[in-house]
Structure formats: structure tokens, C-alpha cells
Length: 472
Ligand SMILES: *[C@@H]1O[C@H](CO)[C@@H](O)[C@H](O)[C@H]1NC(C)=O
Ligand SMILES: *[C@@H]1O[C@H](CO)[C@@H](O)[C@H](O)[C@H]1NC(C)=O
Image 1: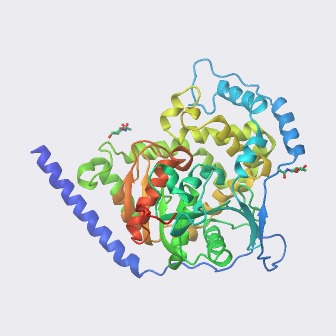
Image 2: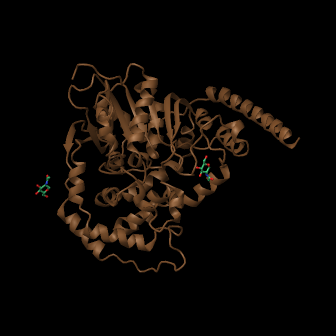
Image 3: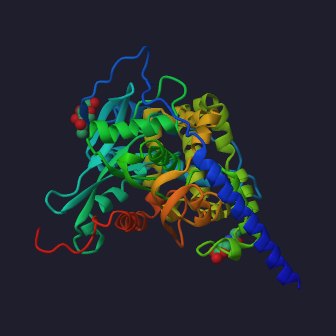
């Protein structure tokens, strides 16, 4: 009796929820989409037209910056005691691990070696809306592939373009992946979000994920002449490519995301709550039967202190992080620990080297350090959270084909169920990985590359990847 009435109640509640959903979409379709200016200007002073030339760019950090960093690392002041009875990352970055990373950074890490690896890619800059935008432009080997698809890759925080360094060659030369040579390959564009990496930071307030979407669309379409392209993103990059889809769908084949950065909406929240109580009735497959809205909520609350501070007073915390390399390292790498897997909080080394190397992690940190742009990257949160109309825009339905590769250990600790994504986007492809967390491109580049190919074949059948016969 109990079970039967429980099921009936569940069916009733779900039916009501679906009616609500339908109603939502009917009204949703009618409502007028907010529009944003087609141009902006974020350079210093008064508006001047862009210099539209494209310049080659080579990373060459001066000795002065490296010597100054060495000095700061040698003089680093760590004067707290690790709590006697805490040996993990539950209070934040563990002191012993901090000292180990500091030792490696001072004695073994070579920026010049890392710089040489980054310079293997072709880098460029061009001015858009008053800002110098840096990007990598990686092309497939000449004459090896019949079809070339332009693909934009967009990073998030606290990463940067470097997160994609292992993914790029897998996309530009898929034949390398152990499969036979394929017909199609990607021509990959990897920009730094303005205020991150080697892109100039905005000189004016209001530079947000909508402006970034517009600037990257201008980069792809107006500067590089890709009339139609594919885009992939994670973290802020996921919102940026979603915004390109919302504003400029005519230029996209589709978008692929490894996490979906979307604001809670009523239907999503209903599905989340129902799914926590009646998982097998709410979710068709893929979603674990222990799915828990409460657990996700508590986990996000526990891990998002950084977000609150960055969304309110970025110019305060940013001062400290711009002045102290180990402070900067602790702030960034603690997130590479807990967002890769929340269980890593229970480890004395934060599990940092389970999926990444010290060199990789320190290079992420170095790119913030040498550009002095942690503060501007933190303002990106302030700009998002302080404009309600722009948050509203992030709820707009995405009408281009969307592919999602969900990782179970991502922020919150559960893959986002397909049922929740379908309420905000035309979901054409969805897969849950067995492993992996928030920084998918750096952690699981092979899985990510394969999934991007799988998605593309589904949405544009002529981009096939059959074995290429006799045209090498
Ligand atoms: C980097 O810049 C220095 C001068 O600051 C120059 O001597 C060196 O050749 C440059 N290296 C590269 C690889 O361009
Ligand atoms: C939920 O179940 C999955 C297996 O379906 C398991 O891997 C995971 O650890 C569980 N999560 C929690 C929070 O219990």
C-alpha cells in the first residue's frame, strides 16, 4: 500500500510538474528575448575604432619578471601552523602541500621550458572593442584532411587557454589518436577571455559574458572569416559559447559543453527536487539513483565562498593575490583539488597530482602571475552577478544543437541530468562519463576530443570520420 500510494503520488506530482513545464514553455516562447548592443567599447578613454590587423604573438616573459618572482618565492612568509588534528584540505590548502609546491616552484619548475611548450602553438593578437585579444590558431596538417571544421574553445576560471594544450593536437590531427586517418579535422581557435591570459583587461565596468560572446563572435566571423563554426566551452566558457548560441545562432553548427553554467529556473528546480525523491521516475537513465538536490546544494555552498567574494569585492582580494605568488597559488589550486573531486578535500595533498602534474598546475598559476590579471579575472564574477537582466539572458532557451559531456565529479558532485538540460537547450547529444571532474580538457583530453567528434557527426552528417582512402 505504502509503495503503491507513493508511486501514485509521484506520478501525480510529476504530471503536475510536466504541465507546469509545458505552460512555462508556451509563455516562454512568447516572451521577448532581451537584446543587447551589437557593439561595445572597453578600451582606455574615449572610443576609437579598432585596429583590425592581426599580429603574430610570441610569449617571451622578461628576466626581470622571473627574477622578481624568484625573490618573492624565496622570501615567502608562511607563518601559520597546520592544525595538529587536521591533515587534509578541509580547512583550505594544507600547509605541508603548500611548502612542497613552493619548494618545487623555487627549485625545479622552469617557466622557460613551459613557455617553449606554449610557443609551439601559433599565437596572435587583434584588437576588438578596444581590447587586445590573444588567441591560439591551430590548423590541421596541410592536405591531410578533406573537411576542416572551425572550432572555438573557451576556458573559464580559475583556468586559462593553457587548459587546452593537450586537447588541441587531438582535434587538429585526429589521425594521431590511434584511429585511422579521418576525413574531417578541426581548425581550432583558443582565445583568452579579456582580463585572462594574454588578453587585455577591460578598462571599463560591465565587461561580462555577453560582451565576451560578442567579441569572440567578431573574432571568428569578422576577423577570421569563419561564417559558421562549432564551439566548445567549460565553466565561464560554457556560458560564453551558450551566449553566442543565444545571440548569433546563424553562425553556429552547434555547441558542446562539459558543464552547463545556467541559472536555476523553475522547471529545472522542480526536476531536481523530484529527481531527488523519485530518481527512477524522473530520470530515464544515466543519472545515479542516489541523486540529491540537497547534497548538491550543500556541496556548492561549501565550495563557493570564493564566488561570493569575487562577485562582490574583487578589487580587495585581488590586491593580495597579485602581490603574493603563493597566495595566488593557494587560491587557484585549492579549486583544482576540490572541483576535480570533492573527495580530494580529505587528502593531505588535495589529490592535486592524481590528475595533473605540478608543472601543469604551476603553469596555470604562472599565466595569472606574469600577466598580473587575477584581479581582472575575478571582476568577471562581479559583472555577472550584479546585472539581473544579464542573468535573465542566461535562462534563454538555446536553439542550436547542444552536446553535453557530463562528468560525475564536477562541481556539486553529480552529473547534471539530461532532463534538466532539455528544459534549457536543444539537447542532441548527452553522455555521462564514469570519471572526471570540472577541468575536463586538462584532466580527460582524449575522452573530450572523442566526444566532440561524436557530437559533430550527429549534428552535421557530412562531417564524417570514415577512413580516408588514397588521398594522403
Ligand atoms: C626574449 O627576449 C629577450 C630580450 O628580452 C631576447 O634576448 C630573447 O632572444 C627573446 N627570446 C625569444 C625566444 O624570442
Ligand atoms: C552515487 O552512486 C554512484 C553509483 O551509481 C556512486 O559512484 C557515487 O559515489 C554515489 N554518490 C554518493 C554521494 O553517494
